[in-house]
Image (cartoon, rainbow, N blue to C red):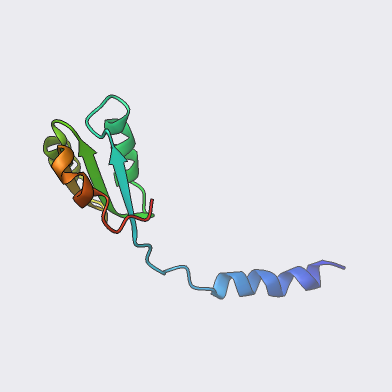
Length: 94
């Protein structure tokens, strides 16, 4: 009885496009630490993230350089020190 109702729904769901691009900019504060580095790696590999903004008081450009070698869509930018905090938080989604 329900098979006739389900069949059109299945064909409709297969015809919908899922190719829209996500443009989510995410910031990780404390990106050079023991939790920030693995978190940044996981976010870099996520297809939902288009830009990854890394901030910490030390060593952040090195972490950003390491992550930039991973072939994903997300761009990585590193910010260091209190004077660059504002730049790290510009136009954030999360």
